[in-house]
Length: 192
Image (cartoon, rainbow, N blue to C red; front, side, top):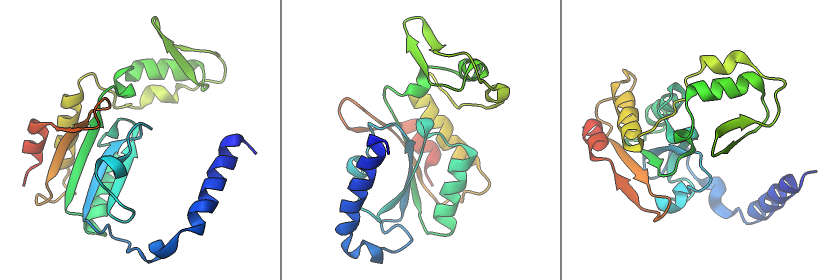
């Protein structure tokens, strides 16, 4: 068993031992809102948004982007579980700003192994076992963080599955200060 697996299972055993009344949490989020944010390990939505277990839905993906699947999750969150406010929260120093769909497609074409980056750009450590399938995916990268928040709020707001009475707020989490910084243009687009 790997060290990581052992650590995760030990932590889970301790967590389960002190699980208490969490078994009684309701299925719908108690505070009635959802957050779409990045999967970046430096972000802890429970801490930066003051959440306890059962409070809110947190949907995470690379970049916190409003992909079809993220919108699917938000719609389910509202339609079946009653959330009525949504936050799109990107963050500073996001890895999605460091490449584009062409770079990702090229890297995957040569190898499925982990790539590295240096002053000369991204490169594969191995060049075997690649796939051309990565060339056909929009990896939803971006160069302008605030613009990407605006685009995502627009994408959510323009979905015909999203009711007009749900406010969608746009923010950027600052990885250096821990503060949420509003993107006013995004929040304006997302207002009801």
